[in-house]
Every structure is written in structure tokens, then in C-alpha cells.
Image 1 (tube, one colour):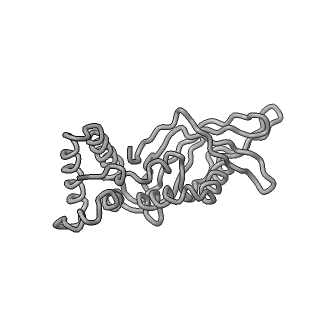
Image 2 (cartoon, helix red, strand yellow):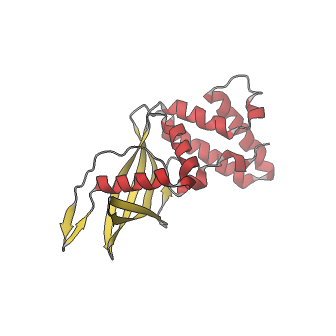
Image 3 (cartoon, rainbow, N blue to C red):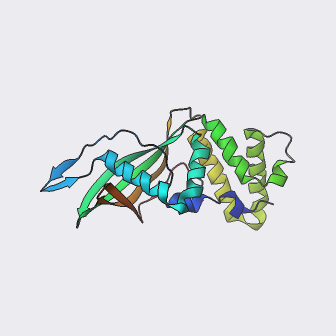
Length: 207
């Protein structure tokens, strides 16, 4: 029987937003409005990256991103809105993953972590197809005793398949939308603090 709590051990960390990957060049330079100089998108991305790199609570999330993106995978940040609030800048942004490997490889590696080792050892082969079949069978087994978990597992497998199966190296896969952060000026640049955002949406992560 599938222990659902073991299937998604990293999700909560990821929702808080994580990863220490490189960001792309900024689409928006620093601008001045009404005497206030706003940080450029690249400065915001650098501050977010530094925050995640230094946050010990983001270790599991960094592992998940590397698992999905590969060693050469990197995060791209798209800044959607920046609002000046009493000396700091409230920022709304999206995060996507620039793939460093094929999406099928990503799925196989991820699903391998979702199956107990003793169960995986019983499979005839360690392939994506074998892992997907095991997870589908587990969802079917959960229907009688834990129907909500069965629905969630099926939805997760379906969504991840649509997101990653046909993705190629260097493709961009959306991870999360409408994340929030507070960007403050620091002596050595910009400093980011995570903000809870009621608008956060998971795109291509386990549900």
C-alpha cells in the first residue's frame, strides 16, 4: 500500500519557494518614479536567489529542483509587479525551470523517489513506464480506503506528465505563479524576504 505522506515529502518546502539556480538576464532595468528608484529585475532575481541559497529550510526544495531540472537546470524569475512600501519593494513574481535534461528523465527520477525502495526492487525493470504503472496501481488501491488521496495522486501524475514528458533540455517549464517577496536595500545590494501570497499557484510541481 502506498504511504501518501512519503510520496510528496518535498512539496511543502517548494510551496515556500526555493532553489538556488541562476537567473536569466533582466527584462526590466532600474527606473525612477516620483523620486523612488526601483530595483531592476536582475537585482530582484539576485536577491531572491541569495535568500534561497542561504535558507537552510530550502535544502529539500533545492534537491527537488535539481531532480527535475538536472545538474544544468536553472530557475528563471519573471517579475510581474513591484510596489514601493515604506523603504522596501513588495514584489510579485513567477518562477519557471530552464531544463538541463529531458523531461522524461525528470519524471523517471522523481517517480523513483515516490516509490518505497522495497517496492521498487520488485519491479521487473527500473523504467518510467514501470514506475507510472506502479503509481497508477497504487492509486487504484487507494480508492477503497482513501479516495481523496487516490484522486490527488492521479491528478499529480497526469499534471506532471503533461508538464515534463515532452520537455527537452533548455525548454522552460512553469513551476509557480504569483509568489511574493519583500525586496529591501542593503549595504551590499538588495535583500529578499519571502512573503505569503494568497495568489500563489502551483503549475508543474507535485500537488
